Image 1 (cartoon, rainbow, N blue to C red):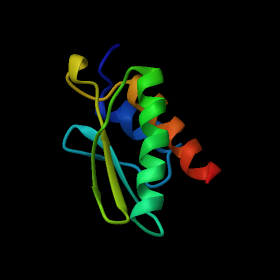
Image 2: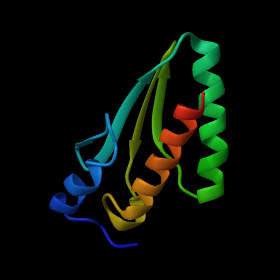
Image 3: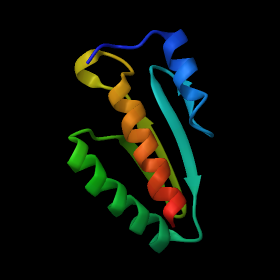
Length: 95
């Protein structure tokens, strides 16, 4: 998959509320009710990541989840990252 230009990335970000382009990746942070809810969402996201064979850099502290996406093989952000980001948004919205 081809690496997107910064202009293409900014254009794609318009469709993803709360996501930003930072240091070569698209990134967002979610806050949940508590650790249990956060971990439950992370588990759902993990199954989707496996299905798409694309895995985020993420961190969790108590009720906060930060997700960074880029395609390591392409050396930057690709449409694959935006596809996973949209899937993550759909998981979050379904809760």
